[in-house]
Image 1 (cartoon, one colour):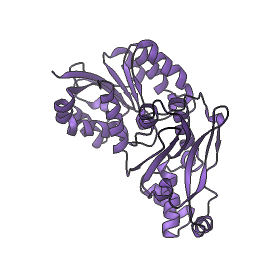
Image 2 (cartoon, helix red, strand yellow):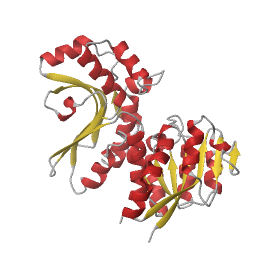
Image 3 (cartoon, one colour):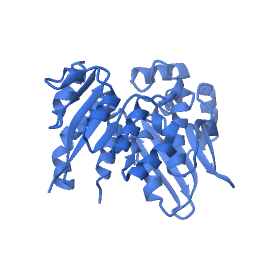
Length: 344
């Protein structure tokens, strides 16, 4: 027996559009192996929305985006100017996939949409960090009250199951320390500087040309993107209520080629880390470039890699690395969460 799952997708940028592409290719296997058929009943981008309770053609939505048209151009059911919140309020679905641009000032429009979806008894899968960073406790409590799932594994290091390892696979064990390379842009920059002997400015320019750094790279290079992800780990894995004010943050702008060469001469490699370390009361949280011994798992990461190391009391030291050259692994992580909602 196949279970049809109706979902609403907010955001058709790289993550949302690639999610649809992955679903198109994986749908026969998901149905055969897991008994799930995902039906897109509404999609939203900056142009408006397309809504159809019978299901939208995901290939048509992707083609519209690839031709640089808005989803409101979807034949017959496109609605120019319809907001994400209006769609959530009016649609009937089982799952909300929230892949809107991250807003760390007030979390909107994603915040209101997630609240509304949970309030309607929908499961929610998030690729947007903003609402989690700002109101993690509220949203998770609302999900518990409504008896629904709130998943967000794609918000920390893309396709790497960073959250899942900590929440699910370390159940019953205490976490003593977490070390993570959660921002791929900064690891790309420092790795290229060291491997090619180029300046910070040249490596940053390369990251921008590769499409992994914004024209304004402040959130990445000053450490704030990694700090946001560390907040999600603190709240979810470590069960420590935390905000950005609880994190010591240092970026990589000040790291020079000479610093990297000096570290290598001492048998070390400088990497951009997010760290949570257990203290007598709670965890100390910080983001900073750190000189690691050459045999450290994260010291061996390449320019496209991100990773995490969990130090535990009874399960030893667990590390995981992902090579991620684009947004597709994050989209696949969103699909993973959608499927895990219904895992037995």
